[in-house]
Length: 177
Image (cartoon, rainbow, N blue to C red; front, side, top):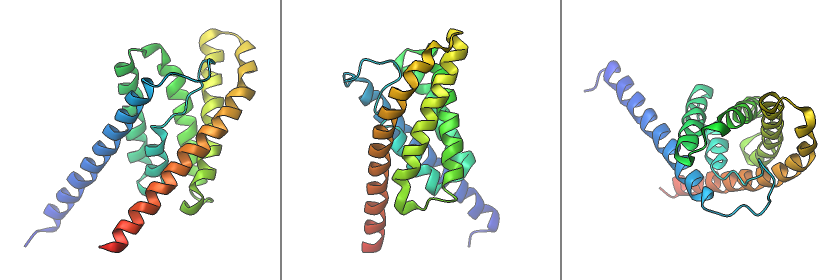
């Protein structure tokens, strides 16, 4: 018979393994997306498919766990992408986005996760733009914000919808067992 201590260790190993798998999946999606030519030639505009994992994780894991997934994905994504100069933009946008999602999950249930994803995409764009203002030392980049927010809403709806489909499929698979 397992002791309480052994159960706790097993749970921690299981949790850490799941978090590592989600992080690896997000990185794989990120690297694959880097290979897709950008349809919109505006800096900062991309679909952000790796955020599907973050949106899912916000509703299924503790805030600290999701923060760990996000930070590792952002850092390793910058390393794998060979673009460490993008780190301040990704970090600022990602952290603001995550903060908003963590607040929104209290008011928006899992069945409407796409709404939280759209709102958090807007926060991501605001964070990116704020970082750009600081890094570039000019407020001129704020002119990009309306276009970034528009495309962010589209991307947020797509990634949120994809996360919602994953959740529905996982629930259906669990119910079949």
